[in-house]
Length: 133
Image (cartoon, rainbow, N blue to C red; front, side):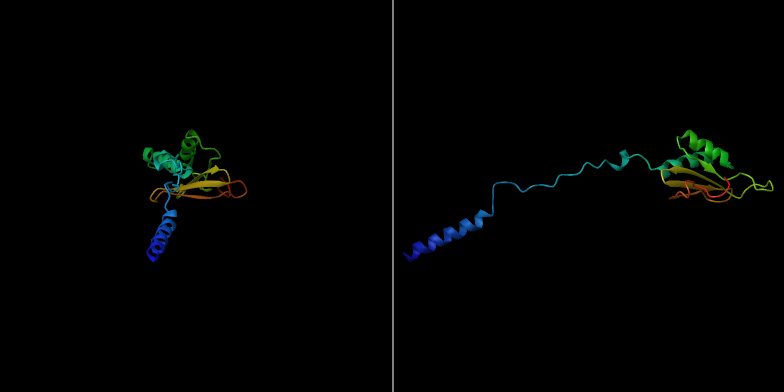
């Protein structure tokens, strides 16, 4: 009888251990439907930079008007530029140009002998370039 009790206890212990093992598979995480990077539309700054670089490639000394025209043609709205000449009719050292994208602005700067730069910043009083432009 002692042996029967031991076998019964062993079977009971085995049953308890196997209860945690079920035939149902564990739930799997469902992957999210994030599009691949290549299929995402380019950001406003990326598109802005592409247009600006195309203008610089076509003209070694582009004017603010040239940047503005190209940006409008590319579908940007709210285009602003600084003047191409100073108040005493000299060439400006660089031109700034910008587009409004909602409450934000993409601003570019280029001048002969300087590198092209762009940045994204908040609009100020609904404008991208503060001052006369």
